[in-house]
Amino acid sequence: MTTTIPTTGTGDRIEEQVLLRAPRERVWRALTSPDELGAWFGVNLAGATIAPGAHVRRNFTIPGHEHLFFDVTIEELVPERRFAWRWHPGAVEPGADYSAEPRTLVTFTLEDAPDGGTLLRVVESGFDGVPAHRRAAALLGNSSGWRSQLQKRLPAYLASA
Image (cartoon, rainbow, N blue to C red; front, side, top):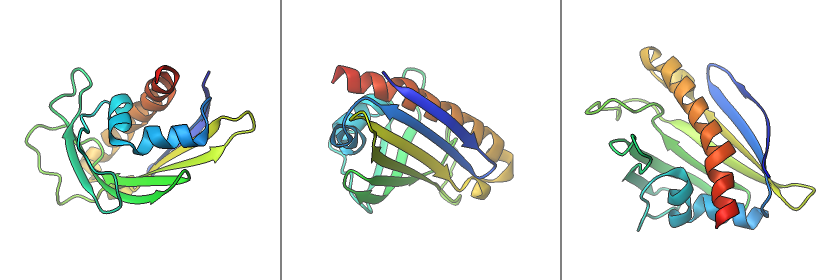
């Protein structure tokens, strides 16, 4: 069972949190092992390196999104506590060059929960740097995406793996 805790969203950030019925070390592995992250996040991460400074660019495998790229730079790995990457939110236009735009920062924070589970918080910040003509759509799209990933895909993966 997964419990979703109310979230907040402002013009600059998305905050989501979920109580997962899995120990912190298990959730950590699902977040930072390339094969496991790829399995629940919907990305082909075979052979990818998840380490600070690494740049990972791979196709999504979610039906209807295969033409899009998971394009991140790993910022931080603090074992079983914090994991962070930077990416371009809402980068969905085929052929568009987003390289000159600032990236948002996605930070996953893990805490032990009283029942032996894990409280996972995800904060994506920096939307104020997204160009004004893309900002609202990027914020809305990623808000919806994080809810789906954290309320459905990750808990289902943890329950089946």
